[in-house]
Image 1 (cartoon, protein in one colour):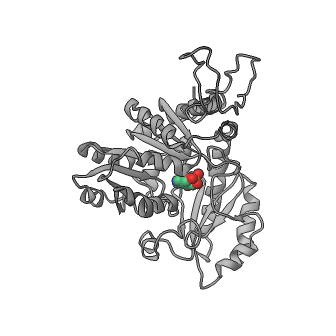
Image 2 (cartoon, rainbow, N blue to C red):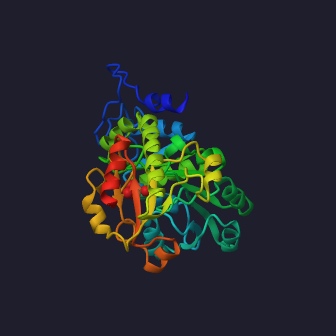
Image 3 (cartoon, rainbow, N blue to C red):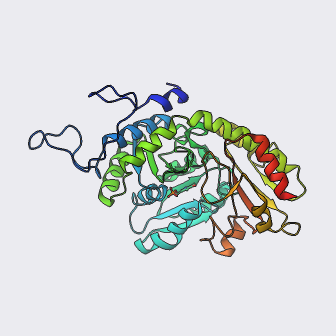
Length: 378
Ligand SMILES: *Cc1c(COP(=O)(O)O)cnc(C)c1O
């Protein structure tokens, strides 16, 4: 099945009792045994649940994987991936990854003996230089957050293979609709399903997807042991949301492209970040590696000309809020919001300033979005 068809159908219609066209929600925490040692595939919802399985089958198909586990949040998926490692292991990650991942890597995981190096992943020499004998994992997030730098996934996979490292790709920003890292040789893909996969800003969730049996089995063990599974109701909501992934992603991209062109030509936007712009430094790579440029646009507001608070208060359609990937357009200031967990030095090193604005461009009428930005910029 092609992706628009798979999103609508895979895993969905499995009801043998009444031939329901959509997936039933099974909220039951426990399932009866027919006799000792004999179940109908499920015994306890932390370990497995039919509604969650439906979602996992759907998302595995969309990413081109053979195994998926849906988790209670995106950070639960990130945590699970790290628990594939053991004390003493070292991880190399980009220096501009999601703020919550950075916080976990920086402030929690070192207590369990993991160490991290944060590098500019667009620079292969820097990545190679960071590899040590204890290095076990390469953590890829592309396009990056919030500046939309693009990492060459195939190049990272090649380096990882030379050194026997596990590659993990956080594919939240593009969704499998626009990028499929497993096809490029990545071992494990994860998402915050909170974002584009659900797409309606009414769930937090995550997912891990792989085609490697060994990694899949270990992830199943970890999610069950640590108790990180997605609730049946939330899984059902994500399965409902994902059916419209294609139409939504196409609308996000159309609007993001219009917003990026507008901002690029606006005197109060000092710099516009969107991989779809021909002058974006990674434009050619993005064209080759992705099947679309996505719905995220960032820009540097000229804070000498307009105060960020004034800009936010004049917006009528864009909502000042964290998160991304929902149908509604959001704006946020990484400096004080999504990336506040990073030290000032780390934020500066990643190219984030107080004027940096991140837009999650929604699926509204693009004319209303441009009009809103024009009005707020003055
Ligand atoms: C939101 C996000 C996460 C974390 O997901 P939650 O659902 O908020 O826990 C991880 N990675 C990226 C890129 C994200 O945008």
